[in-house]
Amino acid sequence: MRRNAPAAACAAAALALVGTAVLAGCAQPAAPVAPPRAQAPDAARPAGSAALPPAGGANPVGEGELDDDAARLTQEEIARVLARLAKARGLPVLREVRSRVLTRGEILARVRAHVEREIPEGVLDHQREVLAALELIPADYDFTAGMYRLLEGRIAGFYEPDDATMYLVDDLSETEAEETLAHELVHALQDQSFSLGKLLRFRPGDSDRLAATHALVEGEAMSAMFDVLVGSAFQMDESTLRKLVAMSTALSSVGDTPLVLQESLGAPYTDGFAFVQALRRDGGWPSVDAVWRALPETTEQLLHPEKLAAREPAVEVAVPTAAALGPGYRVVFDDVMGEQALRIAFAAYAHREAAIGAAAGWGGDRVAVVQRDDPQDPTRRAFALAWRLRFDSAGDAAEAGKVLERRFGKTCQQRASLGPLAWTARGGDVAVVAGPYERRGGGEASAVGTCAGAKTWLAEVMKGGVGGKATGGAAAESRGRK
Image 1 (spheres, rainbow, N blue to C red):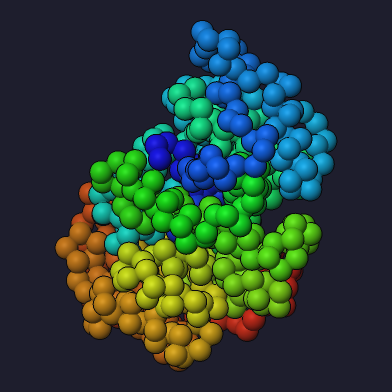
Image 2: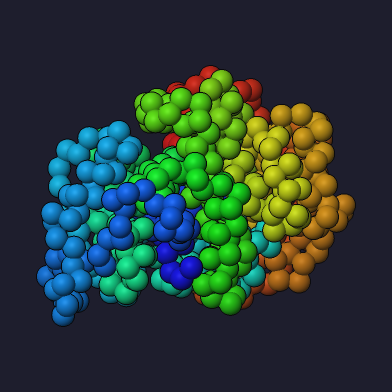
């Protein structure tokens, strides 16, 4: 396994990421990216599934020309593979799919341009503060640069809904090109039937819903790809795929890549594949089609298909306030993290199985980044974080509390660079506050808060509003708006 494990520009959380809510499973994909390699033995391949020629295609003006014309796929070859995928998946081919082959640097430049165009200024910086405050990345880690480095080494291609074009990297092996072509052409079919660009568009505060959609998009592409390449996606065990993705991503990651970023990168593919396979076992591709007509509203519904069937909505949680921190502090970013993101965060604090169990009782949440600007020094800013969660029961909240206690202890922890971190659980509610801490020029952090202040703020956050279960689409829609 070399380059083509899932890569997000976690827009894509999730760049199709840098994803903009990385915790949301790389939830705002600019465009879905290439699948992980999970190659079945030749004997398992169905007749007529011989390897495709190396990927290629017409290059846009100003981008690298390839000398070997024989390495390029013709439009006829693309149409042939597209027809096979359409038959396997049961979606119509409504138009031909354009393709372009680019260098790795050119691919990354296109992802950067998409993120800059689609993600509002400051969002990635605020997401960095969420991860840093919760000790999911080092306090001084350059989150955006780190995601791009990870992406550059992993991406094999992507489909861009904005121009309905499939982009492939020019250094793929024959097997990698075969897998990438099939995966990206499934995205093209999805776009033609379901308008991916609209479904994956970034909306403030909507990362959990977007992460669920992103996982459906990637999981379906994995499932249909395996149908064509190995005869049936049911020949691919879901736990084996998860291990392959984790191993492939870890082996190719930059040495300082935090685990949470690696996990966020693979989650849309592995969780999405498990979700789609469950639907197919229940009712074949028509069951998947039904989900496209009524998309999951939370990653809880994605991770628990029975909750999707019941349309169990999330609990509405108010945006945490920061009056206790004093004048000048204001909420600059808030979002719903969701069960998938909670599981990924908890996996950095505890064993994976414990993290899954502790996150499974998620009912709703809201995280907020608070900022204070220094009027005398525009390069100096103070940040803090508040996270309010509602679980399905007091027992579920206590289980989550055990994970937090394992990492942060029972009482407030005073940290040298990131300031205090305090948490509490009461009934079905859990709250976490972290900071304040200061940064100069966006660089190193230094603590400015105290545990006494954190405990006062924590009490304020716990008093914040938590509603009942929402009643469906209108409530879910409201969660994505300010």
